[in-house]
Image 1 (cartoon, rainbow, N blue to C red):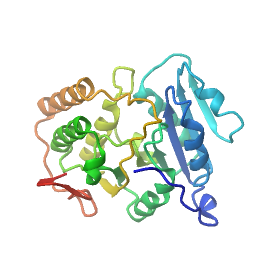
Image 2 (cartoon, rainbow, N blue to C red):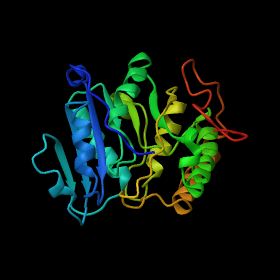
Image 3 (cartoon, rainbow, N blue to C red):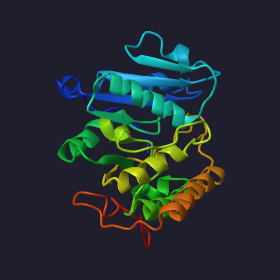
Image 4 (cartoon, rainbow, N blue to C red):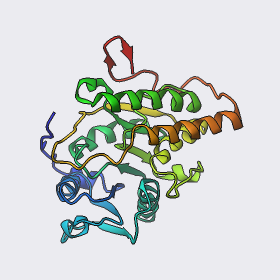
Length: 266
């Protein structure tokens, strides 16, 4: 599915003045400017964290009214997200939207996710893609489902798309959970924060979004084998340390997937 530009409702940016978008970026020169420009149509506060890019990512953002943070050397997605989220909190927002800079997520879907977040503000809203299983490369789909099982087991409830980077977090969440965010954490950060939030009684709500894999975007930084193994190792460590933590998801939590693949619940 190709991304399409959807109309902006009058007053939408002003209504979202308490929201910040955080975009981690590493070598995204081909896509980052368009992604940011589309985000700016939805919200006033956009924070881009350049993670030591070696291409023209920073130059592509010239002239845009954003907050740009720069890492001198690549520190990984976990550190980029953490730094961006901390900057968002300094800007006194109530919620933080995260999305990737490679064009995989449509900024025009931000209002839909925000609508659900405002109805249930003590949750993490996740843009979930697995209902469009046919548009996802099979190896990635299988890796995501494998990770979903283990992360959901540790968090205590079923999670539809644990590897989606398109999310809305309560801004005060980082006061309530402790999550590693060093270079070694990489993609584990987004999995671990779901687990720690779940254990703190904060569940996630899935909202269906398109599964977009553009030929123009650079290859994914996510490595299905090694990164999934790191996630499983993190989960196993938590299960061994704390035991199996099972509980019923609170009302409004992610009790089922937004869609199904043939013969399988996601």
